[in-house]
Length: 127
Image 1 (cartoon, one colour):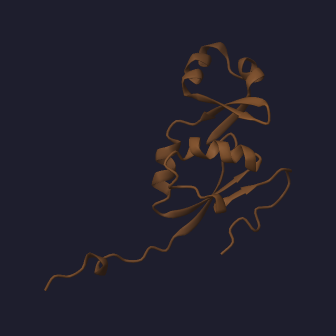
Image 2: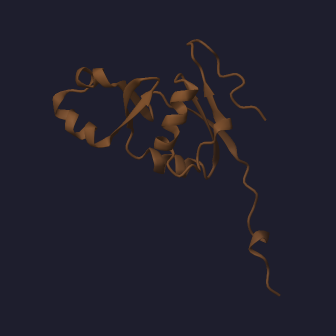
């Protein structure tokens, strides 16, 4: 008698993981500040890894940390990933395709945007 593969798979108790992405997974630098924030020796390396985005008439360079996509894909196997940021929702909507190009790790319902500092993480994960 053939047994189904699902009989051997144990349900995984998924945990929640909260990641604060600002300056950890992604850096957003105003276009006019790039030369002052990045020293000359790093500039060529950074320019090969950055993307230019426009938000409300302002241009920003976005640097996604190397390995971010693989990092998130590995974590999503065991965790539900929640993102916390001080970037605006408009900015996150432009950043999300750069952070998670396949759209399989981070879902909009799991993003919390704080526009002011000092708020607690209470309520980030809602069951």
